[in-house]
Length: 537
Image (cartoon, rainbow, N blue to C red; front, side):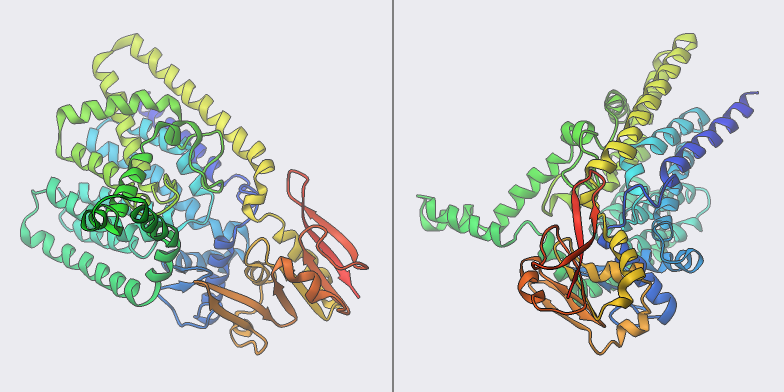
C-alpha cells in the first residue's frame, strides 16, 4: 500500500509539472519574443540548408541582433521544427523538456542523497510548482537547457562514487553546458573546483580523462569567445559601460583627495568590485526572491516572487541543518548556491532572474533539508498533519501563481512580449501579394525576424537575396530590407512613405501619412493599440 501511494504521488507530481509547463504553450506566454523567433528560424535554416540565417555553415555561434547565441539549443530545436514546423510549441519544447528533466533530476538527486522517497517527492513537488522554474520552462531559453545539463552532471557525479565510468559522462554534460548559455562559461570552472574540493575519493587516474574533456570544452569556448562572440555580449551587459566610465571620471573630478589617492580610489577596478559586490548581495534580497521578483517582465511575474514565501522558513532551517552537519554533498550544494549569482553580479540589471537561474536547484534541495530538519524533530500524527498543511499551502500558492500568470499577467504585460507580430504576419501572408512594397516600423524590435519566422521564408532565398540590406552599427546588426519588405525607424515613416504607391504599411498607432486607409488595428491583450495596418496609395 505504501509503495502504491509513493508511485501514485510520483505520477501525480509529474503530471502537475507537465501541466504547468506545457498547457497552452502556444499562448502562454502570449507570443514568441524576438530571441525565440531567432532561435526557431535559425533551427529551420540549419534544417533546410545546414547554415544559419547569415549563411554560416554549422556555426558554433549564431549571430543575432546585438550579440551571438550559443548553438546547443538551436541544434536541439531543429528536430522539433522538422516535426512540428515553425510553431511556438516547436521552439519552446526543448525548454519544456529541460524543465521536466530538472524536476525528475531533483527527485533522483534527493533519492541518492537521502535514501528517502518521502523527501525526494517533496523536492519533486517544490521544483514542479516553483514559479522560477515554471516560467523559465515555458520560454525558449538556453539558460533552462544549461540548468538541466548542470543538474544532470551533478547527479552523475553522485552516482560516479559507485560507478566511476559515469564521471566521464558527468564531465561531458558539464562541458556541453558551456555551449548552451553564457553564464555557464563563468560557472563551469567554479563547479569543477567544488567537485574537486568536496569529492576527493576519486583517484587521480579516474579524474584525468574527465578533467581533460572539460578543459577541451573550456578551451574551445574560450577561443570562440575571444575571436567571435563575447565582445558583443560584453558590451551589452558589462557593468563598466560608458555610463560607468563617465561616473568614475565625475567622482575623480569632484574628489578633493590627492591625485594618486584619488586614482587609487576612483578607478575601473574599485568601481567594478563595488558594483559587483552590491549586485551579488541583491540576488539574496528577500524582496527579489519572495515578494516581487526581478525587473524584467519576461522572466518575472510582477507581484510574484521567484519562489514562494512559504518556503522561506524551510530554506532557513535547511541552511542551518547543512551548516551543522557539513557533509561533503551538503557543502557542495551550499557552494552551488553561493556561486550561482556571480554571472548576474558582474553584469547590469541585478538582481537578474535569468542569469541567476542556477540558484533554483540548490534552493529546492536546501528547502527539502529544512523539511528533513522538521522530520527529525517531530514525529507521529503531528508530523503527518504538518505534512498535509505544507502540501495545502504550497498547492494554494501554486494555484494563486498560475491564476496570475495565466490571466492578469497575460493581459497586462503582452506588450513586453512583442505581442501583435504574429497577427501582423498573418495579415501580410493573406494580403501581401496585393502590394508592391510592404513597410514595417522598427519600433517594437526586429520585424524582419518575425517575418522570416511566421512566413516560413525560404532560408536559402534569404541568405542569397540580392535586395538584402543588413549591416552592423552601434554594436547591433540591422536589417533594412529584403525582397519587397522594408524596415524603417518609427520616426522616419511619415517622411519616407509620403507619396508611396500601392504600399502596405505596418506601423505604430496613428503613425501614417494623411490619406492612408487603415485596414486593421492590432491590439495588445489589454485592449491598447499595438499596430496599425494601412494602405498607402
